[in-house]
Picture 1 (cartoon, rainbow, N blue to C red):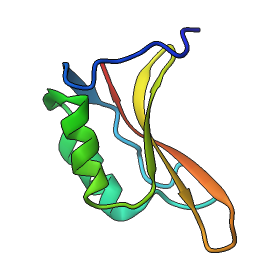
Picture 2 (spheres, one colour):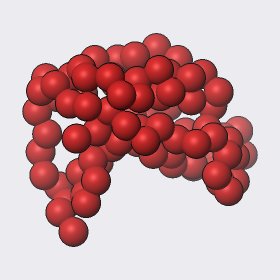
Picture 3 (cartoon, rainbow, N blue to C red):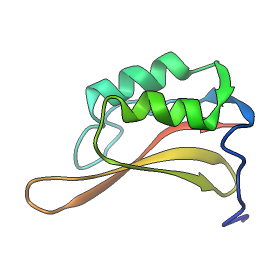
Length: 92
């Protein structure tokens, strides 16, 4: 499993596999984030631009994760202090 590999945020990537919605999580991914992820599906653009589009609809923490697959992750904290992580969309 590859970890901690750096990614060039300005390199154009193809985005795929948006979060399916609820998918058994304790809470659903925010609807506005899901809509942006769905709109990014199949698009080619830089990781930086994709993050900017997602950031417009959430104040959660976004980060790039590089493992066997590469994806943008959203972490949000609910009012009760619980943290939730979502794989927003993958890229290659």
